[in-house]
Image 1 (cartoon, rainbow, N blue to C red):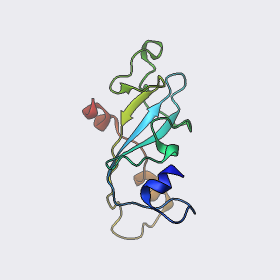
Image 2: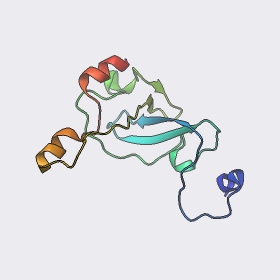
Image 3: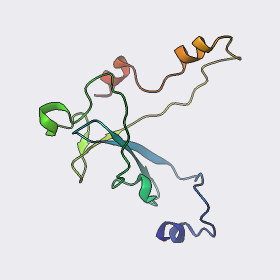
Image 4: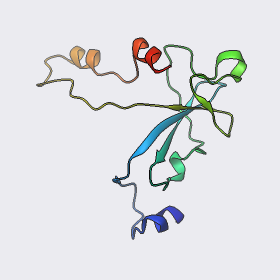
Length: 126
């Protein structure tokens, strides 16, 4: 209710896009590499389900070691330590067109549409 009161909204029937920018982050749980989504909107109106206290972790598959795994969870590099002991990491999203027209084969779609970051891009972030 407090989020709705701050936004002066008259309805509470789901989530809506807003025009406020935000930083997107993830929390990485050092014990197992599960992540939770965290939004940091520039207007400081934060939905609890994506706040820094978000307890909704889910499994992801890491190609490399995940933040917090080194030294028994005592190190969060290249991220920072969150209040709950998880590693708080910045993420970047890119919106670009992959295809100029309709792909001809499903294998082309699977090959070109990926989620994640390449090792080269990851190393550039540290």
